[in-house]
Length: 254
Image 1 (tube, one colour):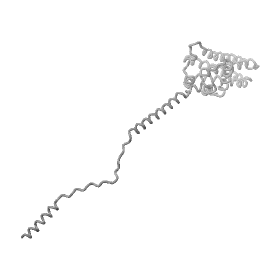
Image 2 (spheres, one colour):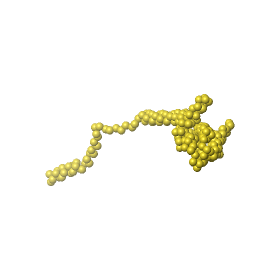
Image 3 (cartoon, one colour):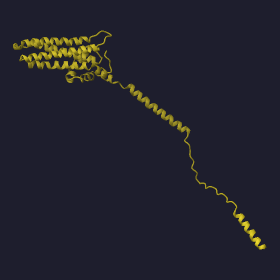
């Protein structure tokens, strides 16, 4: 019996030992630990300041460029040839326009010692003077022609060219103003267009009369009229586009 109890007691000790809770295992720690470093506050501030300074320098450069770059209108006014070429660009005969006006502008500038460069209104006045000079030359032609068959038609041509010359002179006189007055106004623009168109009609009427009479001088007169027709056409085109031209030069009617 004692032996049996000893055995039972032995078994109880073993069971008690086995029921003891296991010792929790410690988590495995890596020999190398990764540490996250936050960016330095000083470095962040320095970067922001650098970007601000850089942006400021770029803006300053752009502002300087925009304020120092000459506007389009000043590039025109600084060069007479370019100004005249721009104005003559609206005409049907830009080459004859440029050549005739440039020649007259050069002679006026050298005689008057005028440093000012021409604007569209001034260039238009020069185109009128060119037309007046050429019409005067053609008018003198009819007095030298001897054609008894078309003598009446030649007299009509003389009268018509005197009328045309008067219309263009009136156009030029309309632009001669006193201090504080505008060289051109809407009324003046309309009147001048009417007068120049009338001068061109006078030329056409002269040629029609010579052709009807079968004048032997027709071809000679046609050849002489070529320049005056082109010059009048140029003047009419410029005054018709004067608002566009002034806008391109950055100028008002003055």
